[in-house]
Image (cartoon, rainbow, N blue to C red; front, side, top):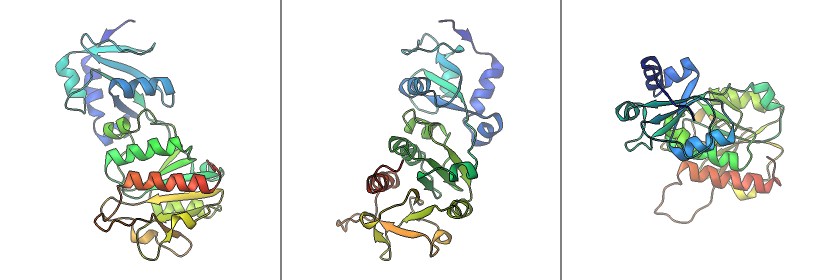
Length: 259
């Protein structure tokens, strides 16, 4: 295993990847932590450009690509966590899918409307991968799927799903023109129990912002509002990632594994 010292230019570039605009500009993101990096390397969903380790750290997993070593001080500057584990990967951001191509498929698509918490977004990506979702739509205001915390929360599932970013109302409209049915997860009195829903072969499940729910503009007659029933009056709502997980389980089960 040949390890090279990182150059100053590499360090400057990698540090910039902590910010969304530079990830977008460079087409790269960072994955941090031994378990996270190991899973990304093993799964092969994204291309790993390099693995970076703290001085005297050696990966406990198989990796044959470029390997660079940095000082403890420099590694802390690169890391997003307070107690870094000494290893991170520099990965290429996979290209967005084309709406028309994704719409030609069948299955369950997950849509996020301004879901801001990186941990929730990462957990939703991980859960959607578990249920073999056909893709995921990241509406405006949603946390960057390649934010370091999102990547850690996916547990290696980053890059596993086809994805598109944009104005969610516009995206839903494009899919609906080709036969997709949208289901908005909403706790309002007019929403139907999700257990009463029998989804078709082309279904989109939408979850909203942690504090405000789904944007009002998304509620139009041809879209169905669904809720997860609950009886404990002391709890106002479910965590966004948990609610989406329950919703996905029902949609896949009710459709006979539509993914």
